[in-house]
Amino acid sequence: MSTRVVVLLSGSGTLCQALLDAIDERAVDAEVVAVISDQASAHGLDRARRHGIPAVAHPLAKGADRTAWDAELADLVEAYSPDLVASAGFMKLLGDDFLARFGGRTINTHPALLPSFPGMHGPRDALRAGVKVAGATVFVVDAGIDTGRILLQGAVDVLPGDDVGSLHERIKVVERRLLIQAVSEWKKEHP
Image (cartoon, rainbow, N blue to C red; front, side):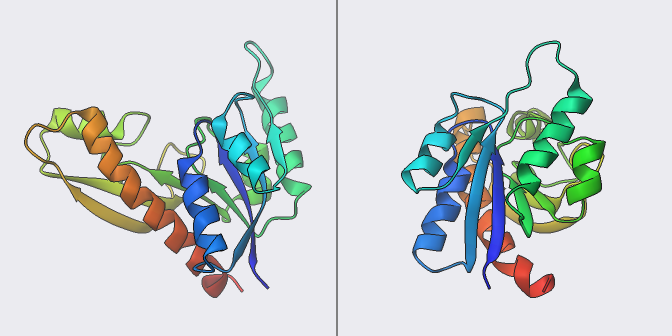
């Protein structure tokens, strides 16, 4: 039986699209059973709909109760009975209620070689630090900020003349590959 995956995203959904393509090509024994976004206008929701996948917007209104939003998000995800939750460009931290239900089976991608450069600006921070090698990480989400158990990493050379955009684009290529690999390996390691 294939791995049932709920994908969380906030934007264009290129990571999700890479996973959908790998599934379509039968490179991964998985099924994306829902895509949920904190942004109603996220292009990633349109990508899911084009694949016939339930696409749900769950925005956090300004000033709203963050704890209630997190519990509602957990309820939404739980309705799809996933084996795995893939945070793929989801720009919100997952809270206690969510982690109580899906901790240990929620993975995230990050555009840096953790534990270096956690947070929102991995490629920028890598360039500012003057590193020669950057990269991407897939890790198990915990209550910290990008502190969970590392599953996979891939290196990306920092090239002369790189700016945040050019470096991040090359990192995204590695992130997509690592996400596909992590989903592919999940069922083997969590039967």
